[in-house]
Length: 161
Image 1 (tube, helix red, strand yellow):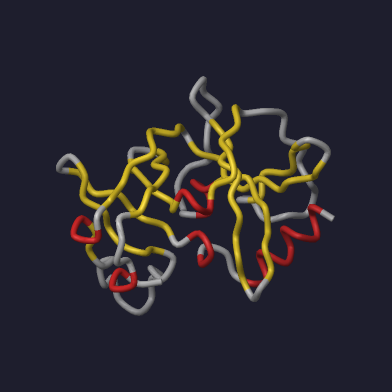
Image 2 (cartoon, rainbow, N blue to C red):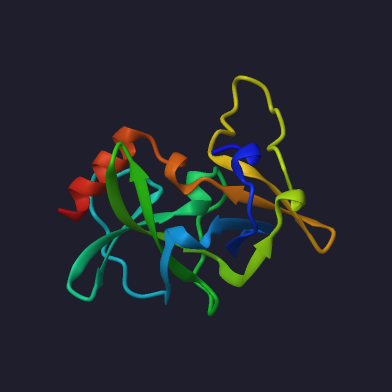
């Protein structure tokens, strides 16, 4: 989904990774959990922190900092797990995304969103819907469905199975 396809006011859940503010469409968020025990699964990529038990279901948890090339998330009082639904190829995957903290749910008008910057062909930015402007600061609006490759999602689904 590109910025031009954002034609209505949309609510976003904003959260922190390192010093950056990220946002995800609230319709993709199931819930936000306090950090709980994450069981490590051997032989998975570093960004795959493990799995949690969510009311009897096994839910994989990924460290969004590691996925984006940042230092590993350190546990603090504000560290949380954002439970999201990712759609790819008509399949839905429920996944936990580790974040430093959740800030707020905010509405952004289409006029507050700019296209993601053109970084060149070597760096992927297709997982960004756009750059939101709020209080003289930019928010990186994620297209949660495009952050993980089909192979990565397949592996996450196998871990949860």
